[in-house]
Image (cartoon, rainbow, N blue to C red; front, side, top):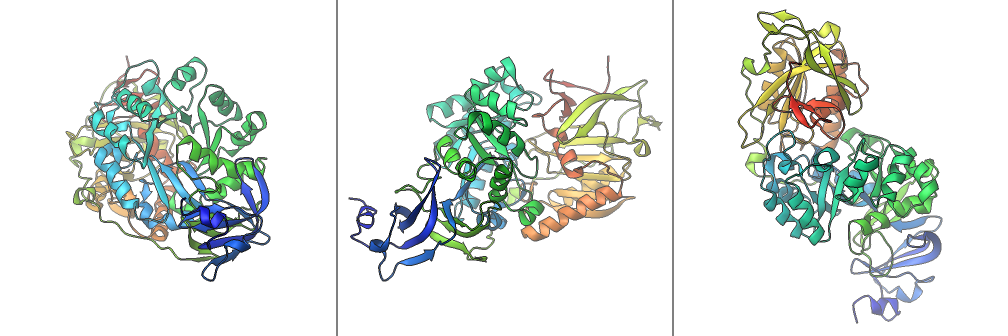
Length: 569
């Protein structure tokens, strides 16, 4: 007999009892009048009356007029970007998130297996569970040579906190061989998941993609989401700092119900984390789009737990881990109490948790040291038009032709006309310092320059702007060990250090949020006219959304899957 049975049978007292609440049973999606009986950090029973389980030392939480639900699970996020999670997790926990499933697209591209291991170590002692996926980016060779041996990443799939292989952009996997197949095959043997990034993928290509991946978070319409489910792909809806796709969730729910949809943030940046919340706001948005509360909560609890094979999570059934939330208003999803692993960590706006620190290896703090030779930012003059990226909003970009001015034998920016230079420099520890300089339009009549090491899916430093301010901005990013720098007339007017791996701030999350605001304000002051000026820059390297992006060797033509240069035939 295990340690839970005597409590369920009324022979021994519980450690904690949550009484008189409306308890959500996510399996049948029903609210029932039950008590929740907890022993040794597990749910022991769900009786209608837990009087027999109450002893002299039993703690009791009165849940009258409140609903009691399992802890929320973020089915897809990126906690190794923007802010170290150990300094920010308490905001997620206070909103009811007790488990996250994260990509490792920040640490992974630069540090390979060590990046994954360090993220797991940094989060291993937090009162919130962190599961990770193995990043395929270091072994993808579509536009640049692979940087990491696939077998060394595949070996990480033995770790119980690794739930599968991280998101693979469909252009890398459909209709071509890829080094990542070693990861996919190992995941299949280990019965772990493969996550997809299927933006713009449909029809025959989606069916081909479905033979590789198990889930996808890129549906932006209900039709997209239904098509994925019809092809056996678990659909993950998102609301966070990147996109709000909850309308797609609402539309798809009307046709296919709740069982094959999970919810996620896809990353909640520091300002939104503080101002809006975490998975509590995601569930609220689903409810606002017409999903009944019980089903919306199931999408953020039982569904992701089952999809990722997380044992005893996402449920309040006897034997489950005691992750329990009390909510006093289902319309606003106002979380008043959070129990994580049987421990009350948040109750009536009082918290018992706080930011924590972790000491990363020295090379994580010294990972940004790219060349600042003026030649890195020069483009020799040429006759006629050259290729440029046309930024179109969000994560979208396209190819265009421009005729930059010529000065001293070089093609230069014309910021007053909205034509900027853009440089991407390789900062991989084993890299050779390769760089490429091209042009970008659509950002605004931007005077000065900005540089950042926080770019998506590659270990690089990106600079955009004009003149020597581009080089000066990169110099400052080097000096900080990573981050953001905005420069005008040679002076740094705003900065944000992200010295952990070049991609994460280890400041207090409130300070990071303030500095994010300062960077954005400086970009707008200098002339950025786009809705999301920081997002626009850091995603210029991202091949997951078409159609022309940056690589270290040239422009990455997403549809043709080849690197192309400035010159056109």
